[in-house]
Amino acid sequence: MDGVTAPVRVVLVDDDHLVRAGLRLLLSGGDGIEVVGEAGDGLEAEDVIAAAAPGVVLMDIRMPRCDGLVATERELRKRPELAVLVLTTFQDDELVLGALHRGARGFLLKDTPPHELVEAVRAVAAGRSILSPSVLDRVIAVAAGNGSGPGAGATPTDGAHERRLLATLTERETEVALAVAAGASNAQIAADLFVTLATVKTHVGHVYEKFGVDNRVQLALVVHAAGRGA
Image (cartoon, rainbow, N blue to C red; front, side, top):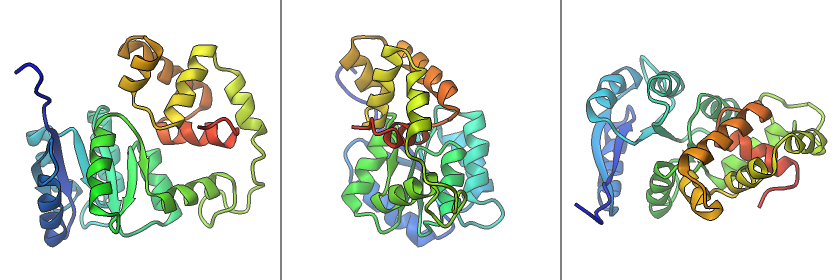
């Protein structure tokens, strides 16, 4: 029907059935969100996701048989358009970076307030990247060589390398990169720049290639490290 927006279809992947029940209750109360499947681990998730065709997957990390990192990488190889939002009690640097490197669109802790979780599901469904504030602080620290995980002990970046990367972009690619770093979705960028969605996707792909990254959070880290983020 004209004017009716399809609900965001969500699959829950967590080995704790009480957690899944709580998430289902929480998300079912959010307008425009529909929980269409559940799985207790990464292996079960494969069949559930194939059958339910969700737009968003809430993925735990520590699960039996197949953990969330492996499941995220496997599912995104098959469905690059899928938005995986990691939801876990763990904020270990390696787990955070592992999830982002595998293409997860967001990383939230399970103590995230309910209304923020609902908004995060909507945001990743719209193409934005979401990190809990404490997780973002850790990612930036590790990227700068100040964390306890991969990269710890490295010389903190002064932004010079990142500014050189920014200098390789065209004017329009720079506009797109800054917008992504500010959290804008592809649709928002297209509207703001008066270009098509396909054009924005092409520019984002070019920025990924020039920066040597493969997701929006990594792109945003480069921009912020260069001192150009919004």
